Length: 153
Image (cartoon, rainbow, N blue to C red; front, side, top):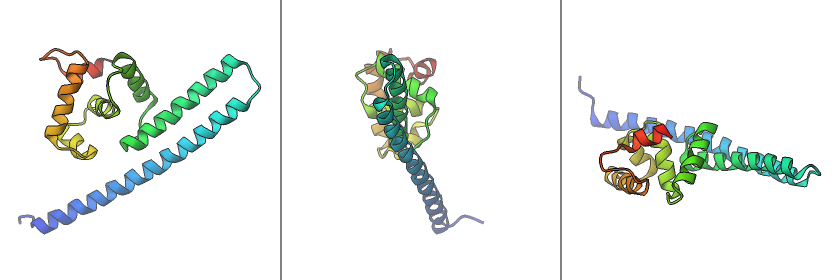
């Protein structure tokens, strides 16, 4: 029995609602994490301890704040390894903008272009244009794969 278009639309709306609920949950959890680490950073600044130790502690706390903010922005949970990847990518290619960094994480995690484009709110053609500009900014040859390059980092 063929699936009726209205049934398919209803199923897709249900799936979309579930995904939106999950995204809201992750954003809420990450937002709380930002507040916690921001408060922790302020508390560390107030401590009367060795300056080097204080710097190391605040750097770690600030990294966690940045990680949580990235998670909220991307709508996905990131690992410390993802964060390190982003930091390495920023160091190696400081000319990449935040959208390109986000795309690099998703490409590295093997998300398909057709899946990424609607997720970040652009067409697949627009995403291909961004990938092309990233390719040039990263100094990759015409036939080199961005996915392979990012996976090797």
